[in-house]
Image 1 (spheres, rainbow, N blue to C red):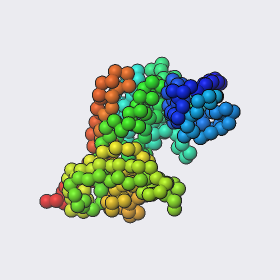
Image 2 (cartoon, one colour; image 1 turned 180 degrees about the vertical axis):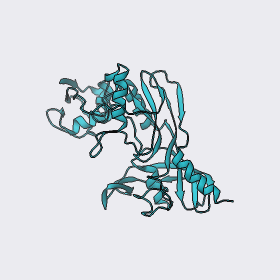
Image 3 (cartoon, rainbow, N blue to C red; image 1 turned 30 degrees about the vertical axis):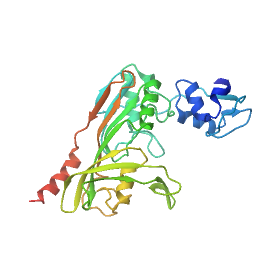
Image 4 (cartoon, rainbow, N blue to C red; image 1 turned 180 degrees about the horizontal axis):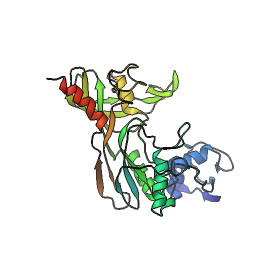
Length: 312
């Protein structure tokens, strides 16, 4: 356990507490500082406050940083489709049906389980960053279990913080392929609608005007079929289930999505036809822009072939 003390001077007054701490304590994200504040591990003048507390000149800030919790997730020998790897990060083409990190009901068979084994085999066991907690080492962003495609994992705190900041600043390029129900009217467009927990079902997300967070999805039509539309969707923000929720909101849910779309599906897809095709970002250490692309998986191509065969 480590205790840090700060006396607030004039140049720091009016700053948000969480922002101040993430600036002054290296190696930890603003999100992690918000968690410490929420847990009561941060006090201002011996009182607990909220993350958005505005600092005042003369405030005494005490921060207790707990010792790292040993990782208790099992390392498993699961083959990964690694597109790129160096000392800072690893880029993976995730298959449909694989969970990114352990959570309730899925403590094995995840990308994290596989990565722990992979890093151990490289004598690099402790390299995965622990910023997001013991269950999500190295995880900067995720894609749904039944969504396939490119995901990047950080192997150091420096890389994690850089990638997280790029996500926050919307400078990471994320392009998805999605097959939608119905025929879109326009060849391109933008959905700008707040997303939050569905008040009628907390396990789902929904477009909610009051309690949601801003979510922006840009799309363009790639190909039209008789009763379906293939699009490329680009994320400006990264809310949970964003593309699936936004497309359902405009009346064109993703094919195979039984949560936000049709309960009865025409095709046996084993999940939504949504593929994270392209990911681009500045390398955390060199600053060089890098871009990675995952080919359209077989299960997706099979449905497209069926639809194309009906065109003629």
